Image (tube, rainbow, N blue to C red):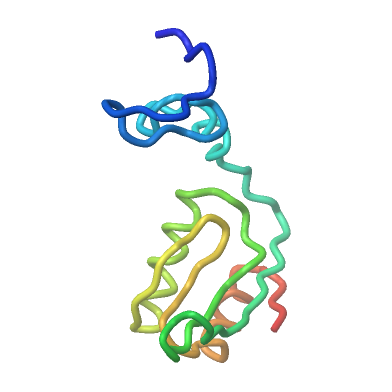
Length: 118
């Protein structure tokens, strides 16, 4: 399969195309290189914060400053959700937990040997 000769402006049969490489979104070549996992560093500085904006007034605890490693973030999110007894998700480089759980998360993250700010 060869790359398209020029940037596709309009296409009726293929659906969405990637704006960077021009390939169909399901076969995009550039997204695979962007999603590469970072190695997990020896020293992690986790930053805790809460957000309410854009969430219908609901409070969400964000654990930021984590490496962009999908497997690591998914496992960490599962562990933290079980420890806090709440729902949440792992995003590109953060873990989001429903509710304000900063006080409960500080000792959990410090027990892993991480520095905790916020």
